[in-house]
Amino acid sequence: MPRRRHKNLLPCVLAALGVCLASQAARLGNPSGFIEPVAIAHSGVPADPAIGAAPPPAFSVGAAFDADRQRLIVFGGFFRGQYFGDTWEWDGDAWTERPEPGPSARNSPRMVYDEARGRVLLFGGDTRQTGALGDTWEREGVIWRHAASSGPSPRTVHAMTYDPHRGRVVLFGGATAGRVLGDTWEWDGRRWSLVASEGPPARALHGLAYDASRRRVVLFGGTPAIAPDVQPLRDTWEWDGRAWTQRHVAGPSPRDHTSMAYDAAREVIVLHGGGTTPDARAETWTFDGSAWRRLAASGPRRMNPALVFDPSARALLLFGGFNAGPSNELWRLAGPRWARLWP
Image 1 (cartoon, rainbow, N blue to C red):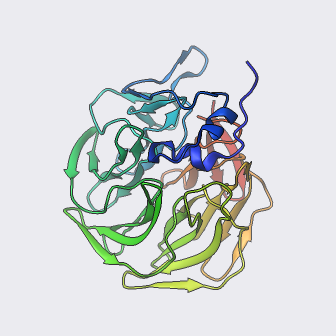
Image 2 (image 1 turned 30 degrees about the vertical axis):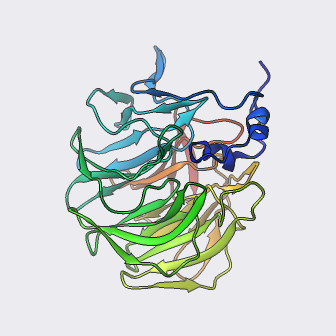
Image 3 (image 1 turned 60 degrees about the vertical axis):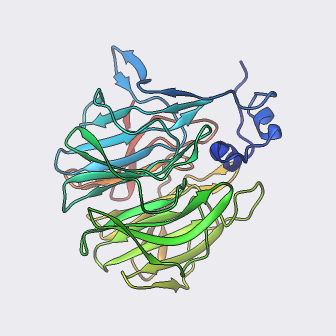
């Protein structure tokens, strides 16, 4: 079978929102459109004696690093009409699929680690059957529990980060029913609160990370509309817990599908990948509060990878994402150099 080429990935990543046109499906090698999705509870890559089992390649997984248990947690995703609902852990040497029940299968959930409470928080995502989701889940140890049904409106391709200084999870933007959002919400461990309706223009598929050295949430890029051939954004904004401020600094080219995380070892925000479809980037950028700087070394060419910081290894971990197709590779960025960890 010839290799599939993703000519315009944004509408297809958001197929659950009803914006994937038949022409896009045809470009993906399916002239009749997307097949009806099947929710997959456990669907990893079969174990290879040489490398072991692993999460399946998928678009738009959720991921967070559980610092208490020293594990990278990966959940969900979508590929070839299938929505995944399996939970995987990486312990530094191998992948393990967890059998405990959890959230329903979905695409584009967002996850962060709540340091104060020792829990992974998951919000939202989408399926073609239900559209955007608005449920909140917590994972303490290996147990998932449904934490809230009220809060932000159902949405997907939003962004979240954790502010340890104030003990809050911060959520911005996303999309629902083909409409982008521009609201800011915070989770305090018990409930969600709408904290700002003004700030950055509405967007989805943007990057968001908390800069612990300056106590600011940093936002970059994204798409201002859910439609083919829309020019992505390249603006930088900061949230101090009270208001958003735009930072007028030069930086990466316009892009969506990007990922950001804080590198505590170097005290900088790191941005990797993204692009303007169909061109995934291999660039890595850092932001120290004054300027964006591009690393000389390139990493994996990816759109929408999961990017988290591993405090025990003092390094960033990058999982999945897509270029010509979805990936389940795991990479590490320690200092200025990328290295592939798995497979």
